[in-house]
Amino acid sequence: MFSVAYVILPFADIAPADAIRASLAPFQRAGPGDIPQDRLSFDDETDDLRRAHEARFTFTDLGEGRGLRTEGGSDEYWYVDTAKVQDEMRQRGLQTWQVRCADSMDLDDFVHRFGRRMDRHKVTGGYGHWRNPLGRWDWWDLGGRFDGYIIGERAHGAGRGVAQVSSGHSRGRSLLANVEDVLGAALGQPPVEIFDVRSDRNVELAATLLADLKAGRQNARPGTLVLPPGSVEDRLRWLHTWPTLAPTEAFPHLGLSREAEWPEVLQAAYTRFHDHWVAAIAYHL
Image (cartoon, rainbow, N blue to C red; front, side, top):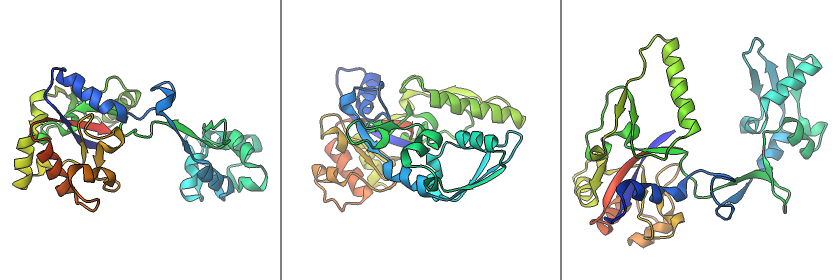
């Protein structure tokens, strides 16, 4: 899923590209080895895993490399490694397997035999993952697929934008581009055209966005707003509308109540930081 975020920044001696990267760095989705361990927290998913352990599944091997159909378990199937299940079915000579793993094994055995890879907390013994609790993006580009949106001149032409200012190389970004290329080739479509994203189409003054907002222009209404570094603590800087409007704890810092609506939040932020500049980034979450 992609969305657009407006990153509010002060005029300073630091290079604009470096300022954008530094502002967004705390919000990278990351795990062990990506950022210092003291910035990670354990996301315990033991209860979800236990529901998968107790769920009733029906697995059907579709054959000829078509994979495994999974029925039952609602969302719990996300915690099941279907490749391991398929191996088990082949060893048993089954095309269809109806199973409730809790009837024949404990939770630890289920995780070892059929669960997706998870970390185990050394103190609590719970299953889950070490993650950056502030993580919001996998990768981002200045403008990207929202090239020109912030100035009200979004490009609608086909192509894949390449921005000089971005989060850098990403395996996920490369995989997605490869999938687009393979699908295009399979459908007989011409190769995706590459175009350079211009920086001057993806930055604006906060004062101009304030005027645009009051005039009812859509370009002043991003789905995400990132407040300047140091204006509030990092956990309150990333303001977003999806899946819910949050964090409401940040609103009093803008002179608003926690019940404020998004247009009020935008107007308060543009007003408070009227002497700042704003960069529009497309991010994958």
